[in-house]
Length: 243
Image 1 (cartoon, helix red, strand yellow):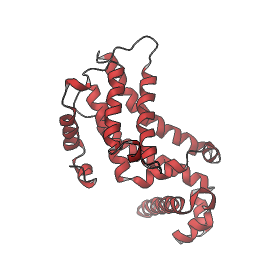
Image 2 (image 1 turned 90 degrees about the horizontal axis):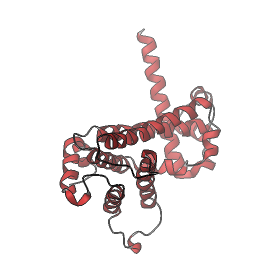
Image 3 (image 1 turned 135 degrees about the horizontal axis):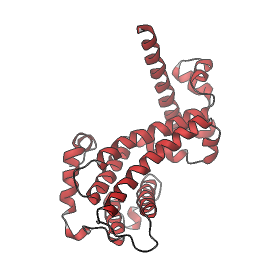
Image 4 (image 1 turned 120 degrees about the vertical axis):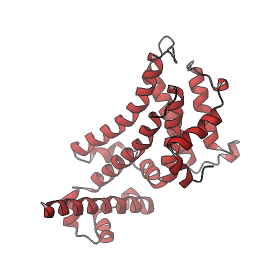
């Protein structure tokens, strides 16, 4: 039994090394030049050993995305569990996402490089299904809080508006903003000196537009933000240098 458990640990450790090595290579040389030979060389394992874990480089990359989504999910879960109104919990999830990106920039950068359906399509159906599951679980966390907001009367949906559309607006607005932050676009030249502050303001403007109570001007949201960081993300905010 002890030998079996040791082999499992060694297998998991080897797989982690393969994925971390592939991520470093991806960011340095890109998808095209990334191959199993380079990964094997840097991990000091044979190609045969690498193939015991993954049948192609795309499976490594998809597993990389799965692990990133799961890691991001831990921040979103904690935000969703914040003791506050649904709107405050959404705010906590957005702050959690921000901390995930701040503390794991390589995960976010690699995700941007892998937004290609053909990469996913070359992985086995099992890997594709696991990635879809991890991504849907994260979106489901946001959807769940929005549904609670509607059921509790904090949001009264206007005719034709669905919870899915609000979820989509929040998700794309936040993700899109971080894509621009990591791009070569000169945001300061566009008058955006503090993009994270702009994200915070735009998200609340979106929620106000959907008639989500309490409205932004009705509460001290800066105080709420500090309470969220102190109560559920104190260690992470310290590591990220957020005062």
